[in-house]
Length: 417
Image (tube, rainbow, N blue to C red):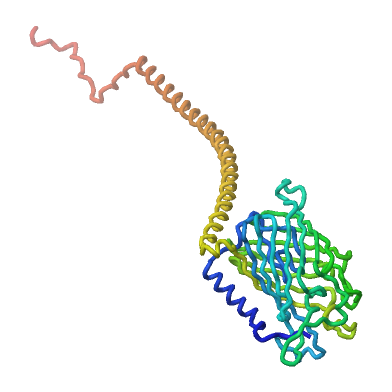
């Protein structure tokens, strides 16, 4: 069903090489915006997986270069398919201008079919303080391919002799998808520097609602309201220059989900589409080798700025780092100020407790000092009392030798003899 020209088949590989060269030469980070930038969709401009969102980069001349590949097992014998026939690839470039509108062009497959797309912002959420969502209108598949289906494979080429000629399978002739018009509203949540998210809902014609009269063969289940699409994302920032985004949506036909890793503007996405359909079962319908079964998708993209690239500016990484460092420092200052307030409260409580302890200790010391002074006073009074009233002298004890005997009365003193 799908045929790859040898020259065009090198397109995804050439794009991958150009992305690496551009990253090494420009060394640019993802666009510095208030909100986490949206990635490129699988086939058109920025958005979720397939659906658009009401968002245009506020930085003039930002651009997204993206290639994607989708598994389509349209052979009866899938084992007979090679890489070129199993994967349908797409390449698109999307540019954003003046913070108000975007415009781009996409090659739908390896053939390649192509078409323009664009979007205009009518309302920005920031204009009304976040009370109302952002609103935008846009166009897809603006080009010469009138019968493009939702997978963008309705137009094909066939080798006729020595030349390729364009053709449209008979069951796609009733599809009318040029142009596809839509309106979408998006509401943001969370912090742009931490975990953030958004929810989008919109309605469109053409690719979003026209099944060309094929009915269940074109899509068996997954449609909520004809032409209505909705979806959301949650973004994380594991490091300064890295973001991880989880996406889920209903693209008016099927449920899709996936994850996207972005590092310095280079993004890699892995998605599952038509998840509710289950595995491939060609016996269900004539077109079930194309529709109504789960498909896997991979995307590789690069985000930069046309003005920066043209001028050779390589300072955006530093500017982004300083901007995010500024936000980080402000948050750190606020946290430290709250910490200081808590510490001051604790200090006042500690000081109040210490003063009470000091007062009790002072009272105890003063009591002990007073006791010592009272003891000294009592001792001095006793000393003074002793000094004023000394005790009387004591009588010496009698001698141990006998006293001399008295003279005899019969004896005559010598002087009178």
